Image (cartoon, rainbow, N blue to C red; front, top):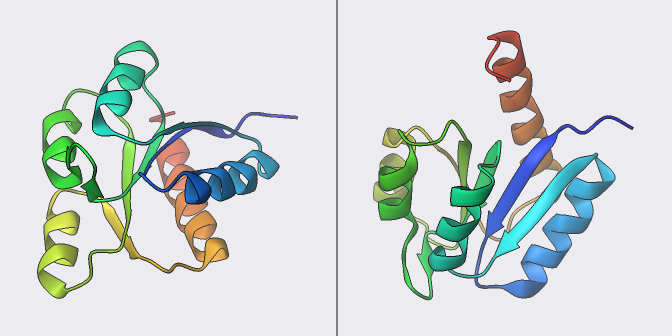
Length: 127
């Protein structure tokens, strides 16, 4: 079966990481998880993922800041899957070039957004 890409989930919620891992593996993605930004930094230094799906509020920092730091260093698509609601947060995420989904989320919607972004990326020759 073909690999659709590598995904890194960054969320302090280990149960959510597990659920997302299971879903994405069913759809032939290679999945890694991190519960802190420190773990995420170490992972992307070794193996830059195609997609990063992350919470904004993490035990050791802010996902927005992380996104700002890495967005020009690695070509990963970044999605915020976050408990942070509000238009200001949504706009900040979108201005960073990221998709923004609030929790609780609908798993088929998350998958559809990722698949759509990956199709556009492939169409544009970026994968």
